[in-house]
Image 1 (cartoon, rainbow, N blue to C red):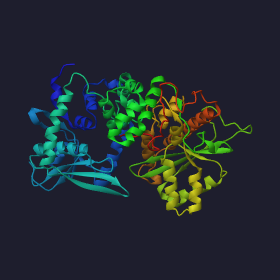
Image 2 (cartoon, helix red, strand yellow):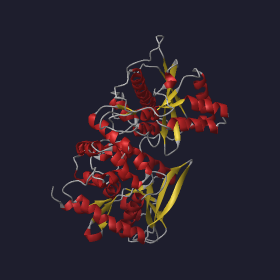
Image 3 (cartoon, rainbow, N blue to C red):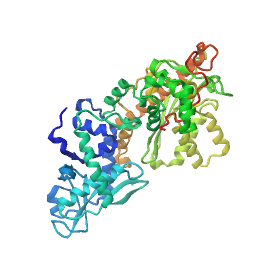
Image 4 (tube, one colour):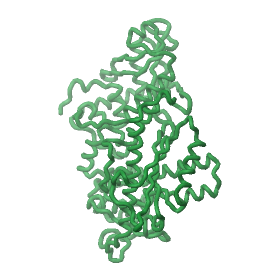
Length: 530
């Protein structure tokens, strides 16, 4: 594809995309828009921005240049244009301008750009985009812009931070913009990024996922992040197929110079690559002093509670605690299949006006209503950490905390300890999807659920809440997560009941597979980004 004159235009949106991923910016300009996936993350950002600006402003902003000329306190809908390094065409659409002291072509006042920040702290992306807004705004209003205002929703208040738009930031911007333009002028997209774990937030992830699978990109191997990928490429292992063909002992020796942690995971990385290449799961040898069964707690239990939380991480709000009560049949068998009528689902909403103490009492009653030997299954560490910390804040005794910890069983940790699966991620979506589980609401993920929650919650008052239809969709998604968790547990139980595959007495597959035990994951998260 030949470069076009429009490639000389760099907008704030393209700069933002480029700072996240060079390939993403190219696809934003040249990609087939029909292959873009809708993502709730953009809607969440706009929702958060709207809430920040409503909290910041005393009255509704006015629109466009006429509002600036009239000296309006806040202005929206302004499009800024200008020239950058080497004559680049620049364009930006700051979401809000706020009047401040200074001089401009309209008189003894000026405007500064306002940005709503997502995340806990300012990033390079925030700074450079704000720098571009400030540069173009200063030329447009013919008055200096020394600072931008960054706002974010904090616990019960609006956080404000002034960002200085000094010479250092201007130099960084002048260095970045020609690089953006050069990438946009390429005939082919830049290569896939080394660490693709954040690609889940990108609307181009489907296209890039297919490309990564076609290439055998090392990021497709679970446990390989950017740093570890670089080390493997240096050792002549640039693709999944090469890693699968590697000798584990030789790889461990080669990686040892970079740290003992790399040596320890070498055999597991080779085994994971082989499992993904062949498309077949691999049972791992039991660790010393560990039960052979992945879920020994279920051997004598008459039932289980499957537990899943829905959260708003920015607000640090665990707004829904969902429980799926599953009882063992009279014949001693666990329910099979994936039907929505397996077990009884019980959602507990954590509404702010009810308070945390009331939530804890409701959770205690629910747990006490089931036999104490019923395990509390969850997928990942989020639920166990949240529940134990809640109990601690509410003054639970050490005895009660010990009993709670004993009941909690992290299914993700058990799966990683006992099995390697032909998946590129050990997240619930990937694992349950590999098992054939399908969520009843198509294209729904945690971000979409969070968007529904914010829409239903409204301004936080009972009068400002949305329809019950939105709330039911949240419950449906949470219920599905519980059913997916049970599908993974049911598979583990089935494998435990099946006779082990012959291995010739080796702790791992026979022959030239792996000659020593495969170590366990470095952490219970199972997603090292080293």
